[in-house]
Image 1 (tube, helix red, strand yellow):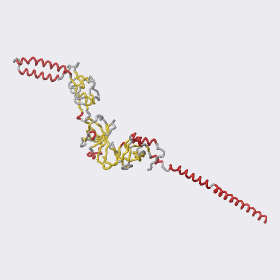
Image 2 (image 1 turned 90 degrees about the vertical axis):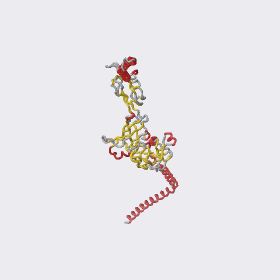
Image 3 (image 1 turned 45 degrees about the vertical axis):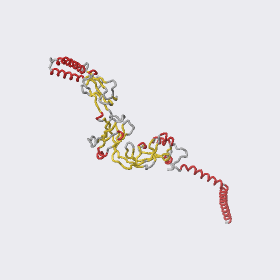
Image 4 (image 1 turned 135 degrees about the horizontal axis):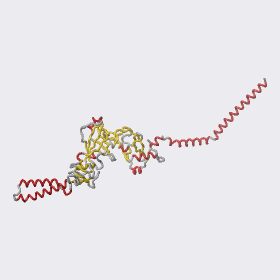
Length: 401
């Protein structure tokens, strides 16, 4: 019993000493490490903290803010023709966009016709698209070699015979040998032959009745034509008619339409009706065909507008007061979304999505996305868009939104 008690005490003593030593070794070591490296620990901690803050600072700006900024130096913008202007409110007409065609006005169209039957010989300078002057010879017509002979030659022969007969009877009439009735009959025959012959020394000619452009030739060189047949059509293009085909469901608004903007195929310019000295010439709808109604305008040509040209027509309806509008040149379309570019400062821009309404071929109504007074790019938008694609942002440049 004593042996067991002594052995148990020894074991407990050893266990207790081991635990104590372990505790003593841990505590002083921790305390020592803390005291020995305190200043170094603080220095490292402070250094790591500053370094962390330094790295984190640029990340504070979101990618969206960074990517929104587009930079273009003022000198480069001026060189490229980039112009920014404030967004303004103005009167804006409700627009109906339709397709139409340009036709020659009836007063600006003429035909050159054959004055006799025969074979046509076109003048060497005559061709489609050729400009001719009033009175210019387009063609000559001859009956030589045809059955019945040359009409002009026959007329000259008839005139010669009538003149000789009149010359023979004139002295006889003075002497009273020929009656006055026979003499008068000879005079009448001579006048008739003279009228038929006309200016027979140059043959039968086809003359341009007005100045203009030859838009159609109805015969080829060497063809036979009857007297009165059309040889060529001449168009002056001074006054032209625009036919706008309007869907029938706009019937109630047609009475409000008196003005339009026009974009002709192949011409980049946008014409106003006023700039072409134009006017609406149809009051009521004349007919409805395939769900469309024709509306007509008359304009003065400028030398570039031709008969038959397709044209985009922006019919102006009721006037809308204080609409927020921007030029079409300010608008960019990307995957069905429309954008404009706002100038934030002299060398910084950003892209803004906008919702648009109607346009009149020159301006477009902005329904949302930009406020009045914002400075937006109205000219040279493409160059700002290219600068956006390059993604070049100078180091240190930032703009607070």
